[in-house]
Image (spheres, one colour):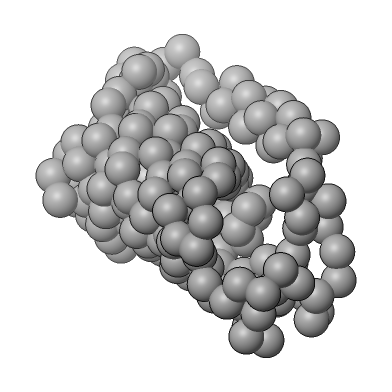
Length: 179
């Protein structure tokens, strides 16, 4: 998991450096003229995502994902195929601009939750449902051209609050197109 996280962070840094230009600031349409974004992310969980801006600095973020099983040490194991579990997350985000050049770099922080349901009814430890309180933190790059695209990197530490208490870390690298 750590190797994948390092690769995701490196990829996000390269994308950010590649797309940050030194031209005059010009507005992107994400979050203002285009408040509804739809896309996908890879990571934990791999998911279809949606983001709806309430105003230019706050938004709701949704995800419908799937993944495989892993033990408490982070080791993956076979437990019913590629989509061993389904997950749904919902977060309320506060987003603020860091850099606004040719493209825009924002950071965000939020509060939300995630529900995980095993597709075959139970994981290998006998659990069928997890509830996770989470605090997503991320970077989002939006573009002047195309003015409807966002690329983001997110880390969401959390606490499993049902069926047992434990720490959880979600992470994702994603892209969204805005309408």
